[in-house]
Length: 358
Image (cartoon, rainbow, N blue to C red; front, side):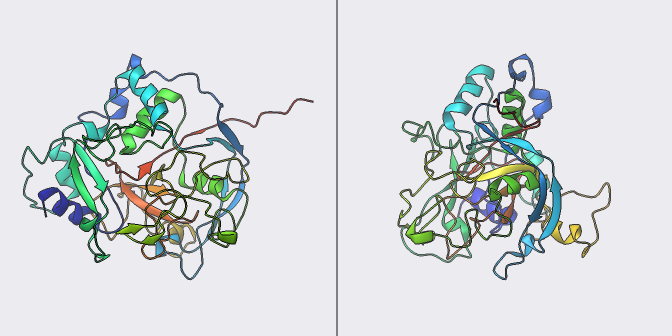
């Protein structure tokens, strides 16, 4: 096991699949004339009516971080119909010259803050730009050892999803991956939009179906039809691809929900603006004390050193024998300064619904 994978196991356990890197400056500091926001367009966006949302799940099979279900109020907003694609991100990079976190050397001083005390410093070679990539093992492996399928690959980034020898040819309309939180913020600044909150994302994903297990109802594959890009087979060694895909899929490959949003479930996890708190729902319900002002806004007992943002929706790697996160209620932490081969994003816009003429 190389040094990166060893640190990966320290910091991520089963919950957070990310490489750890840090820019030398914040997104705000990087914002210059080249990153000045465009006039935000509602093209390829749909209106999500606000209202009351039953957030989370009381299902016996739901994960602890989803419980209990709580009622929250969400103001209406616009959301992009698809995840941000490689071609869209390419336009942003061409306009701004932006380099993603995965394309920069790792900042050890920032990295060590998220690792156990006295962790030995990595070599300069190990601090080279790169990212974590899913690589299917050739045989069944223990599900307790995520290093069997997650590998640090030097040179992996949004342009080269599997590493230096890979490219985006034929994947222009796939969701962009290897995107860290600050990368998504930079794109959002340029687009004149923002990342959704966790509640906004879940409201949009449910498509008006309150209390249902999946975004389309209570049956995963109604009448044998797969409605999202997930993992069929024995994870992680064999994806049967019964849904037509064994990696990311072009956006809009599956039917939209009732609001007109595509791929809210599966394909890639999607970043939100919320810090990850494993007890968020319990705190909202008054069952656990709220975090005091000034306390660390992130709480994950399984990953105590990392600062994480909430990701939603599951990905093409979610399987029935490992993680059933292909549900609107599912939530997970992702290190804020990390990107992986199964995490992307989409944006939202504040405003009012467009009035229909006539």
